[in-house]
Image (spheres, each protein chain N blue to C red):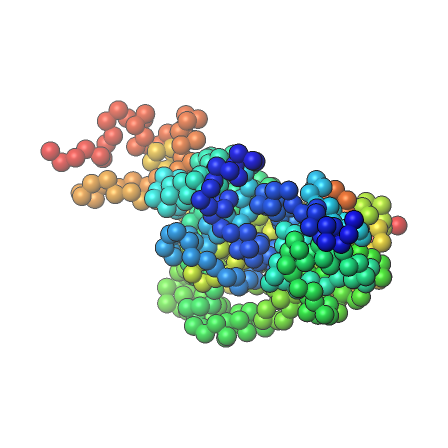
Amino acid sequence: MNAQSTDIATYNFAYLDEQTKRMIRRAILKGIAIPGYQVPFASREMPMPYGWGTGGVQVTASIIGPDDVLKVIDQGADDTTNAVSIRAFFKKVAKVDVTTETAKATIMQTRHRIPEQPLTAGQVLVFQVPIPEPLRFLEPRETETRKMHALEEYGLMHVKLYEDIAKHGRIATTYAYPVKVEGRYVMDPSPTPKFDNPKMHRSPALQLFGAGREKRIYAVPPFTDVVSLDFEDHPFEVQTFDQPCALCGAENVYLDEVILDDHGGHMFVCSDTDHCEKRRADGHHGHLAPEAHLVPEKTEPAE
Amino acid sequence: MDIATQSIDGGFAEPVFNAQAVFRAIMDAMARPGSMQALPQLTRPPAPLSATAGAVALSLCDNDTPVWLDPPLQAEASVKAWLGFHTGAPLANTPADAHFALIANPKEMAALDGFAQGTQEYPDRSTTLILLVDDLASGPSLLLEGPGIEKTSMIAPPGMPRHFVEQWKQNNQRFPRGVDIILAAPGSLACLPRTTRIKSIEA
C-alpha cells in the first residue's frame, strides 16, 4: 500500500480526487437502494472525450481498489481501441491487475455487451451509458420525464413499442430495449443488444451504470427482476442467428458480422472475444477457423 | 486528553485506501441486504461513536453532506469536533435536513419518517441512517427479502428502534421515497436499503 501511494505521485489513486469519489460513491449507494432510478451526480471532465465511457470510467475509478482485477470490453471485444485505452488508463493510474478473462475479473467495465459467460456473485459490471433516459427520444424535456418516472407513467413507452408493431409487424427495437426494474422504474439497459437483456434478470453480479455527459448513475442490485417490456400477443424475443460462430462454432451467442473481402465474403463470429478464444482453446472450432481448414474457403484475396 | 487532540487523532491511517475499502464493504452490504461485511478497525473516534460508524462517516461524509447526530452523540463535544475535523461535514439542525444521521442509541431514536424521505421526483434526496448496534446476531431475527437477496437472508441486530418492523413496512410503502439504513457493529456492517422487506420476526 505504501509503495502504491508513493509511486503515483502525479495523480491520486484511480485519477479522481477523494471528494469526487465520495460524491460518486454516495450516488452509487442511492442507485443501489432505488434500483433503476437515475441518480444525478456532478460528472467530472475525464482525460477522454464524452462518448468514450467517461461515466463508466468515473464509476470504476470510484469503486476500484488495489486488489481488484479489471476487465474492459467494447462491444464484447477486449482488443478494440476503447477497451485497450481504458484498461491502460487504470493500469497507469490505479496500478491494478487487468485481465481479459471474464471469470478472473472482479470489476468489468463494458460498452454495450454483457459477457457470454454467466457472471458470479461478487463481480461488478460497470456499463458505459450514452443516454440514460429511456423516455428521452419520446419526451425531450427532463422536467417531464422526471415527472413521468415519479408518477410511474410509462404509457408513452408502450405506445412506442406498439407503433413498432403497427409499422413493422413486430417490436423493431433491437438495442437499448427498455426494461422494467423490480416492477417500478423503466430503465435503459444502455445500448446493449436486446440479446443481453435476459442476462440482467436476477444476475448474481451487481450492475452499475454511469452516464458521464448526462451526469446520471443508476444501478441494478444482484437478484433483481429486470423484465423487458412487451405485449401479451408480442412477447419479448431475443435475436437468433442462422449459423454458429465461424471461428469457435458457438451457438446461442451474440455474433458480429465481419466483412472479409470486397466480393461479398463475410462471416459471423462471436462478439465476446474472450468467450470465443476460450472455446477455441478448448478444441471447438467453426468452419472458418484456421485449425479447421489450412486454407480458409472464402478469404482468398483476388489475385 | 483535551478535545483538540482527540479531534485530530484517530482518522484513517491511509485515507485513500481505507476509504475505498470501507466504501466497498458498504456497497457490497447495500447490494446484498442482510449480508455481514467484515471491517477491520480503521478509525478511533471518541465515544460513544464506534470505530465502524466512524469509518462509515469518514468514507461518505464531507462538506456537501449535513450530518445529524442523535442526542447521545450531540452531547459529546469531542464527537462533533472529531467529525468536523475529519469530514468537514456541517451539522444538520433537524433530521429532515440531514443527508446522513448517526444514531448511537437506535432504541430511543426519532421516527424514521422524521428524516428526509426524498421527493417522488428525487427519491435520492433522503437521509441515510447509520445505526450503531452492538452486533448483528443477538437481537430478534429479521427475515429479509427483496432486491439483492437470492431467496431470503437473515439478520438479528439488538436494540433496534421501537416498532421497527412496523416503521420499516411504512418505509417500504413510501417507495421510491424512504430512508436507507447502515447497521454499524463492531468489526462488521450490514445494510437495509429501502427496497428490503422484512418478512417476519421469529422469536
